[in-house]
Length: 206
Image 1 (spheres, rainbow, N blue to C red):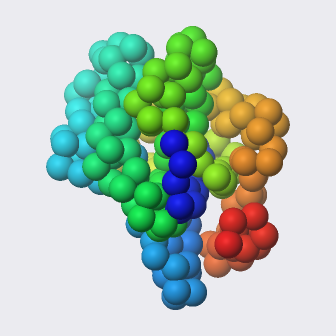
Image 2: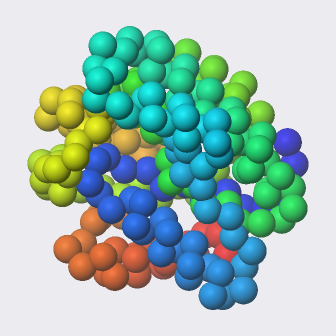
């Protein structure tokens, strides 16, 4: 699909500050005069938020990997059609807190699902829309999980080894697609992390 806008996604393991940094970037680009749509996954629409509650509820610990993957894909299909695709066609910059790479990292590398299957389903639900640029915020797993000590959701409650597989999966993806996926090391000062992100954005997208 041919679109006029730019699509930027943020990826990262738990506690890396991804949501904060993606929102900071959205505000930065708006101040520069860009038309920006910020979305998050899963969530962002009425239907997607309902799916998010099911996915993250600690009571649903028995959910199968296939069910989990398909629920994430269902949320993605809805937000692409309802928000992302129209915004890109209108020439806006869309910033998404997570996208298809999350499913590959979490359900593929993390839970051991067939990555080619995930990619095939993903291509269908995203209508062929792919990020122009992906920022992967890299932080050691134990440091990230320390930021989430209270109120952990179903995904955050998983083992250290699961989260390590997720991080390693992201790094493998970045190695395979270095032009699209840029690895940004998380700094103690969030403003320093944001500076690194803006350097990447100004160079590759804007």
